[in-house]
Length: 326
Ligand code: PBG
Image (cartoon, rainbow, N blue to C red; front, side, top):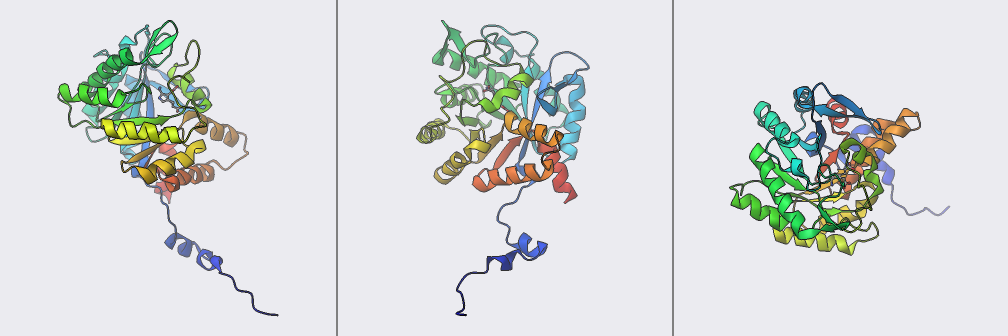
């Protein structure tokens, strides 16, 4: 028989050590950002029904949670607030004693080295559940910017290390940058949720944060999942306006976008492994249908391979634990 010509790819897959030597993508604990939901009240440690393992915590439980995060080697958390009172203009988002402002102060007092990111949005704080000012069922762009700037400045005053605006109003990076600079926070970076799609994958988060829109949807400000070029336009604007990080959200169904943005822009890139991506895996794992650890590590490795530098994920503590075991 004439000898076949082909390449033996399996040569490099023969043993665990050989495979480790040629592995191209690695997850590190430094890549992880852990989301935390803080609520008003005392002695609250309420599991989110649609997100097993994720809790709404009152401030008296916060230190224990942060101690665990720090012990695991995680470098950063992002804080979401669930206020008791909501109103038309989301006053609790920019109140000096708002739940997020209190949480940030408390964390920074006890763990000054932990990088605390503040999610800057209004939907958790508005009675209508939209991310901006509403008039005649329209979400108004420019009036919303003023409130977002107030929110960002109050978060920076409380000690936030990074401001992460997620509201998708046009010009939010420019407005917040100017607001922070004028208030003396030139050194505080902006992690822009630059590319945020109007996604059904946010469903469980809206349970966790009590932030479902009371009418309509978010399609007039969040992006159409069908669009790719629009992601470039959003990223270009935010880079021009002074963003320090770019984020793509969600992650799992948008790995192509992560790769595109990585190839064309040179800011650190964050992938948001969102609530629906978490809940799907939890549900399947609870049914015994999948191997949770293997699936999670494969999914997050895929996000890094696609180009993410950092991953914001509800699995951060689990992953940190698994990386330690290894
Ligand atoms: C606030 C915000 C949302 C998420 C993060 N910040 C929800 C939304 O736009 O409704 C979703 C995160 C997740 O699903 O894990 N605007």
